[in-house]
Image (cartoon, rainbow, N blue to C red; front, side, top):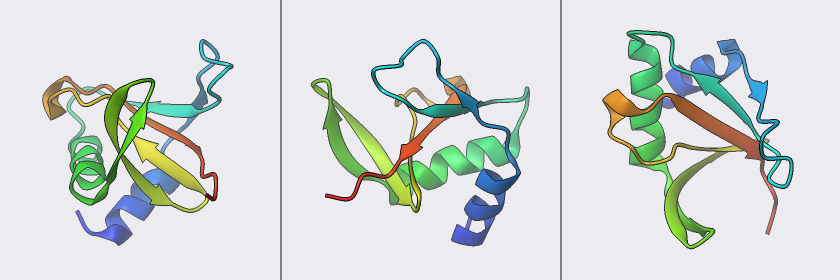
Length: 90
């Protein structure tokens, strides 16, 4: 997947607020069965993301303003969510 493919993916997906984590406001999109575009987006995040520690654990975050995107690090075929949160400028 190229950057334009990732951009198209994030624009066309439905994103839902993660209400179980109000202390860490973010949204997620969910895998839809066999979802090649989802798999490609996960791979894109992992290939282009930068490591960052959150709650003592390392995740790969890919920044595409105005959001940062990440997964929980499971194997691609077991990954069911892609998360995003507003990008905080440091």
